[in-house]
Amino acid sequence: MANEANPCPCDIGDRIEYGGLGKEIQIEHVQAYITKPSADTEKAVIVIQDIFGFQLPNTRYMVDILAVNGYTAICPDFYLGKEPWKPTNDWSQFEKVFNILFTLLFMQIREVDVVLKFLKDHCNAKRIAIIGFCWGGVATHHLILQYPELKAGVSHYGIVREGEGRYDLKSPTLFIFAEDDHFIPLDQVASLEENLKQKCPVDFIVKVYPGQTHGFAHRKREDINPQDKPFIEEARTDMINWLNKYV
Image (cartoon, rainbow, N blue to C red):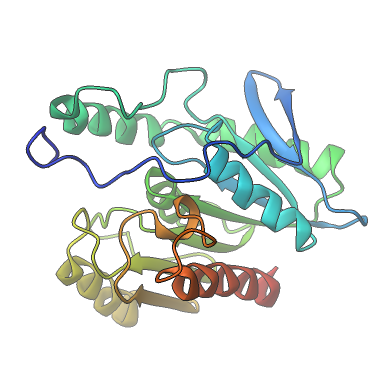
């Protein structure tokens, strides 16, 4: 795992000056960033943060992309005020922190219920999907196993966690991975796909994007990474198309 000689591939990304189109709100005990589309909609997407927290501009940019495409999009702080990982932190402690975050992940059912209720009661949401990045990609996979009411999921480069019960998806799910992701070996991606083929009862796609690294779809700016731009745009288009198909 990560250490000073082999730092974690979770680079914080390029879009550090992005201001955002939405606003921060308080939903009971959960802070969140929300952006609404220009026209009324009954469709909503919950966006789950990566290790850098719900205030990361890169993630808020993705929330805003969803809103521009007609969805009420909300990114709750599923760390519940706990300090997110920072690039200046000691990378030798990353594995320990990451394991703590995984433990936190499986305790978030109450917070998901709070957000779902808010979307239904205050945003007129009748069809809700979920997407996530990195840590949020793992969370997306986990929650799609738990919540049949979620109409679709998109998991971006979430660490593959094997085990029985990991393949009985309740809703169609798109899994986005990067070919050169040193955090997620391609043999694990292939194993996930094979197990889903054998055991998954709903539609799914596992897609690997050539030459890309961990975080490419939301942390790289397409305007200053011309060699990556086609794949960044393809991944975002695939995400929107998947949501449009099932939500």
